[in-house]
Amino acid sequence: MTARIVSIGTAVPPTRIAQENVRDLFAGQPGLDRLTRRRVHAAFGASAIEHRHTVLTELGDPGSRDGSAPRFLDGARTLLAPTTGERNDLYTRVAPPLSAAAATQALTDAGIAASVVTHVVTVSCTGFFAPGPDYRLVRDLGLPATVERYHLGFIGCAAALPALRLAARLARAQPDAVVLVVCTELCSLHVRASDDPQQIVAASVFADGAAAAVVTAADVGRAGGLELDRFGTALTDEGESDMVWTIGDHGFEMVLSAEVPRIIGREIRGAVDRFVGDDRPPDVWAVHPGGRSVLDRVESGLALAPEALDASRTVLRDYGNMSSVTILFILRALLRDDAVADGARVAGLAFGPGLTVESAMLTKRAQVPSAAAAGTPAAVAVPA
View: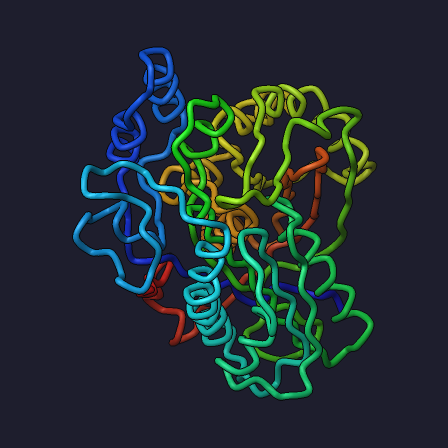
């Protein structure tokens, strides 16, 4: 039996920030020259993002900072520089409940009890601790103590597709397996003031969120979902130094050069043609929105119709780039979209450091809405 995604749950922090407000915060930092302020306005204005979510409550409301969290802003709204340790301590505290909320929603929507989960696959590149996110899910959700646990760390924006690939292989190898995949990223923990154009671009797009998928080949839970047909991975011929994620003394540091969209635009046709091969063309596209320019390059490089990336553009507009989490938000939207017909072929694409192109081919199978899923919000807001 083919492994399938039975359901996808999503969760975000409750602090929702408007893009223009974050733009003004960054443009108003002391010591920035006129050119840098213009760059800030240009980057934020070109992002095609309207709102994002963050665990840093003070970014949305100066008076709402959790007293146990490090300060990221002073009274004059100047960005401070907490140490990497302080940022990671906050990750350790707030990432687990966000993960648990997304996972709980996924299990409820699937109609599958926590007691039947056999494997957990967690994904994150924005924090570290041990016992880690996989362990916490076992404890927080009451999963069996015998659950096999795997963590894919520091892979970047493309990591959800390798996680689904691992889940599909586990499900095929063990017919009764029920695999819980959970991606959680708190990108805003690594915010910093900077006049570096690459840091400005990163500040303009990244956001926080979590998503979980229930994957199985067994006859359990709701029928239908997204069948996981096959996966592919490829490295581009260039770009190793254009998307880089390293650990610094004051947070993780992102290099995101202007070459990234151009490299993707040049490489995407060859990568997709090799992956699709002799199969019929996909009916629907789920493309990781690294930014608006990435989606524009994919659209032009593959000669797609303007509406082909609507789901990706909508998630980017409403949530920003949540790194590995984002592609699951898009797949959830397609799974719940009645306009995507039973039997539709869905092509997933995500991009990560390397540059790495991860691909997935999925087939949608119609689902009967469960009582638990009726009225379920797009993303549960979880207090820090």
